[in-house]
Image 1 (cartoon, helix red, strand yellow):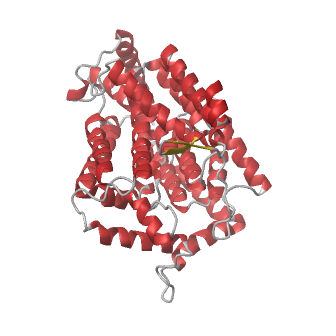
Image 2: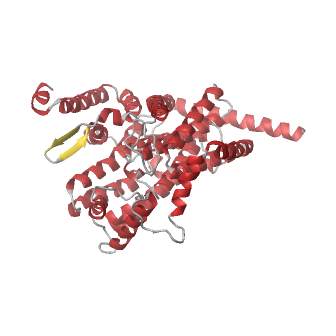
Image 3: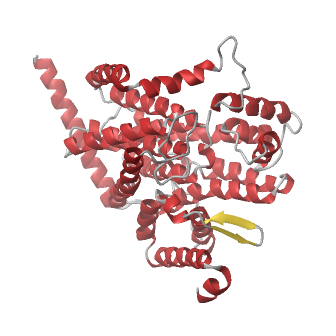
Length: 472
């Protein structure tokens, strides 16, 4: 560290400190590392601090060490400790093939820095998911959820500070957009949406305590979501609210929320309505469709170019990161295409599109395995959360860059590990069919016994409710 400070400056010393402390904590106690990691990931932009590190062609900020650290530890965990990344995990094959294609495509990419950067961003949440899922038990399921909540404290407080003081992202189309501890308001808005999926599902569970505090937490998330002025995330949060309210049979919440929202829009929602109108104005009869001064116009122009040039290399694409280089050509600066599907198609061709569809299909299938048994108790709680997160992920990929926002994606992957753990337990209890990749998974007898007691309690409660309805 002394040499790093003498020859490279304080940012190099900070880089070594982060790697050293993180690696040491991982080796000493992997579970503690994961919980600390999930807590710190939301403060990534604070860690970054604006300083950058450039060593032998690698150029990244200190926050970029998060994905470097997660990816590097992932390799150590599975190659040195020789853990099996396939056992009990539904996405190892599909996402592994998807990630491998992007890694191989570096060979024919336009530029090395953006291609390696994007591949590492795709790898970081995947390796985090592999590590978490390898060490899960019933206690850690609760610890991971607690860590996700704890990690939101600083972003929420800082978000309200920015909102109250009029700070945040640069003025975009006339709006000061709150970005909190994230690089961009879109990152923050997606993070808030994922938190909402988790918090609202728990709020709907009447067995949970402190419902008043949970309601205040949800109102804080919604308020900050509005202040990001990210339209697609507004829609995603709305879909999450409707889905969970319907599943948990809280139709009154839908009616009350709709009435409250309508009143709020009329009384205080001029900014929201103006933001939505801005998007629609691009498609008016006399409007210029490809107006590069509007967020919709430059997207449409970019997407049109991506689609047209896709046919130059339709099978394997132009290589990882090449869409950002196209942004340099079109706009004079590095710009991601804000559409995950077109990015995959342009950079890895039809092969990448097929693999990405396989990944998304596997995600949804894993989420619905318990849900289709029409269970809404604790067992399927995380499944409902994950389905809403995945629907959000699918939607946000249509207009933004969530595919590379690893600091957001990590939370979705963490919840997936919890879903798979519950699905293995459910398969052992005979509630759902057992998948082939789950056959070699070892579960403690206490885990199975606890699940059996949980299922029996749910069935007894359902029988009691049915008896009450029959008497009425």
